[in-house]
Length: 124
Image (cartoon, rainbow, N blue to C red; front, top):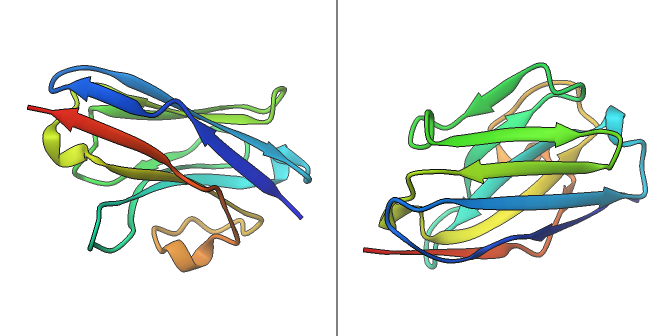
């Protein structure tokens, strides 16, 4: 059973930056694909970014491409999401997700394990 836990959310002004972290346990981290999703109140949970098991492949939603960067540290079982040039529309709860599937997917249903989420609020 894999467990993931996010940290690093907070309140930031538009144009600012945050780094989200997600620590995983309970599985062989290098065998797990990791992703980040976000969900605003009353809206669907949407794909943000994903990274392959060895970190060699990364994927981004168009809305964050060029501003967010996903990375992972397999030695420390952690995945990161660097959020730069934040906009008010980035305000959401950000969720870390994990899957043993080797196929990339932007569908939240493809991920088996989820964290509790961390809130990111961007003020204008």
